[in-house]
View 1 (cartoon, one colour):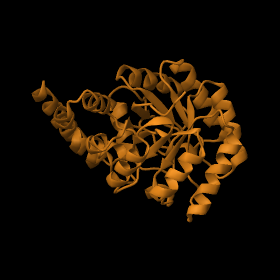
View 2 (cartoon, rainbow, N blue to C red):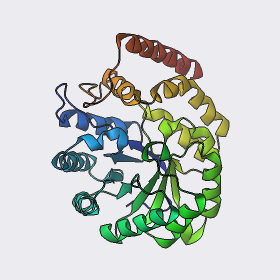
View 3 (cartoon, rainbow, N blue to C red):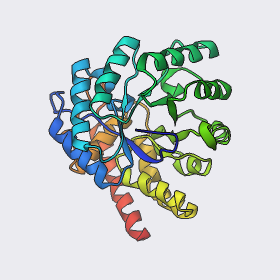
View 4 (cartoon, rainbow, N blue to C red):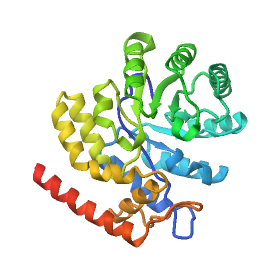
Length: 307
């Protein structure tokens, strides 16, 4: 189970599709093996970048169960269960927890525009899912439109012991991260803080007290090594490595196109049979692909120079 001291890199996994848009479970097997080989500490599936809203309920559970079977307990797997209905959320949670999930991730509904609504919603979520289900709360206002104040988040964490992890994706958010870390550093109130935003600010977030990352990137080995170096005290070495990958991180961060870029790179790396993004979704132009090739070549040259 995820817990208040969980750390490392929980990779946000893509959902592989065939060229015609069907679930590609063979690619899913390769993807799991690839992520484990790269040294991830955990995986998160059915997140926003996992195209969860484009899956049917049956597809969601089929994919989750397949990933859980393939992982077979080697690392914890968190499953995104966010949705408009608490009954459906509870049903999916029960299914994935029974299948071996280590916890679930819940983002707020877009209508939660007051502190009172935010606190009330997560009280309802905790009651619906049950006290034995560890929860990762996703704070991602750029997508959800919900802005949590520091004080409201701390009240939610204090009121619900089963919320053991924060996926911090507010932007700008470094000061917020520092203040949450200071308030949840020790004792029973300690909280695991993993960060998102495609690792764009990962070195600074680690320096502000994050426990690691929960995000996607086509080169998960970079995040694994940056977090490991930082936790070992090699802050400059972590930042030097990150800097080599920064142009690729930035390119993949493009809003509306980033998932297509990530899937294209995973396809080129032999992980996914197809870079398909389910409709409606972005696709890369011929010029995009040429740019990506140039960035990849430059990255390989920079990495060779670092060794």
